[in-house]
Length: 417
Image 1 (cartoon, rainbow, N blue to C red):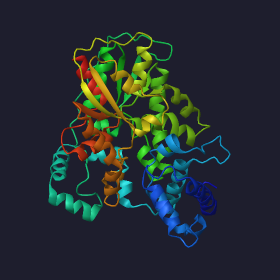
Image 2: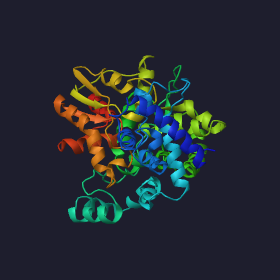
Image 3: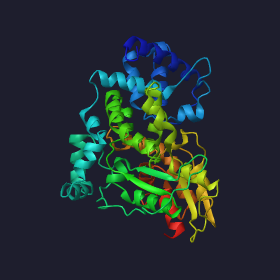
Image 4: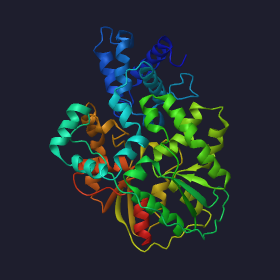
């Protein structure tokens, strides 16, 4: 039933009709303007006048930020209309994938574990970074591969040979945390910004939290989820869960530096596999890093002897952190730093995992990011950044000066460690 075309089209028509009568989400992403244009240009000026073959145009513009459901929609369950727009778009994406209509480019760039590790090998890494800064190569990449020539793409960084861990730390458990964390580095943290992992390690150990780096896990599955490759998601789940749950059994809490990965383990996998005992066992052990730090702070287990002010900080709240419903934990923690002013920006950066780099959606992503970029410029901060490093890079791309900084790196700088 989930992938039955008639059942899917029936639900799309039902929800699209509700969205047409509401239109509160028109400013969020291009899914809604696409839908409303299709309706307004139809013969009937209603959803029944839209060709069902065009429904896919709407889901193609959704990058599953979840903000429509999180911040706008009044018809979420338990409302009787039970509108869940993001997961309906996921269903449409899964149908498209099941019919073999997904571009080969998208299959490659969402295979992050394999693709990133291949690129980040010695020799290939240097060549890839050089080509990323070559205008002729970027134009060729747009022509033959569909990656926009101006899109912000990450550099590949050599990983430290080994992180120096403080094995002698004795964990102190609290009511909700165990004082031992295993960091799920993520594909991005391993290959593009390992400094985030280093800084997180430093901050946690500074606060007497015992740390382990997970080196044998694979992608969390979010890129494949956004593609609609549900079989790929399940394969990654089956690879990761034995590793992660062994750590939980050994007394570790699981931390990821990127909100999308945390969301995958806390929400998306439990929704997909509600009867899977391993999924449900892992869920309560997964934390956003600042959620964890604030929980420890409330029990007097966090040091607040910061040596440096951060000045004025423009802090972008990542969409997939907001969806976790944990509150503004990053802003709360940064607010502990003396003489630091935090300006939070709660709008989508437009990056998504891959939306901002594709030839056909790059300009739309820039349009979505423009209000965030303009706000950062207006604030004139000493530092800016996001819990999502890809969002931070998109903002820096729009500002065209300075570099985004992950909040955990700001905290390390404030501690002076």
